[in-house]
Amino acid sequence: MKIFWEIASVFLLSSVKFVFGGVPLALGLGFSFFKAVTVTSLGGFVGIIFFVFLSEKLIENVKKLKEKKHIEASKKVFTRKNKMIVKVKHRFGLVGIALLTPLLISIPLGCYLAVRYFKNKQRIIAYMFASILFWSIAVSSFKLFF
Image (cartoon, rainbow, N blue to C red):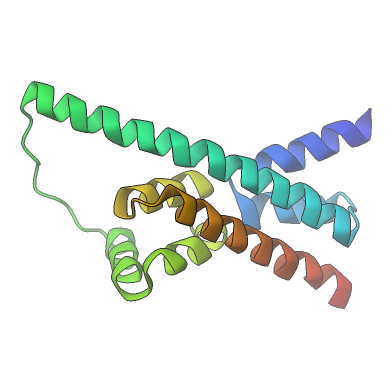
C-alpha cells in the first residue's frame, strides 16, 4: 500500500510542478530510472491535458464576462516575469514556452500561456508532451550519472 501512495504522490505532483517537484520526489523515494520517467511523464501528460482544456474554458469565460460587463482592458503592468514570457513567446514561440514550462514555469501557467497565445490545441499538447518527456529523461538521468 505504501508504494501506491508514493506513486500517487509523484504522479499528482508531476501534474502541477514537474522538474522541481515530481522528478526529485521520485528520485528521492528511490524509484528506478524507468519507473521515475514513466510515473512523472504520465503525471505531466495528465496535467497538460487537464490544464489545456481548463485554460481554454477559463479564457472563454473571462472573454464572455468582459463582453457582458463591457469591461475595458486596464493598463497592463509589466513585471520581469511578464517581460521574460513575452520575449520567449516572440523569440522562440510555442517551442520556447513548451521547453520552459516544466523547468521554470509550472504546468498550469505554461498551459494557460500556450492556450492564450497559440490556438492549435493539438500542437500545444504535442509540444508540451515532448517537453515533459525530454525533461523527465534529462533530470532522471542525473541519478544514473551521479
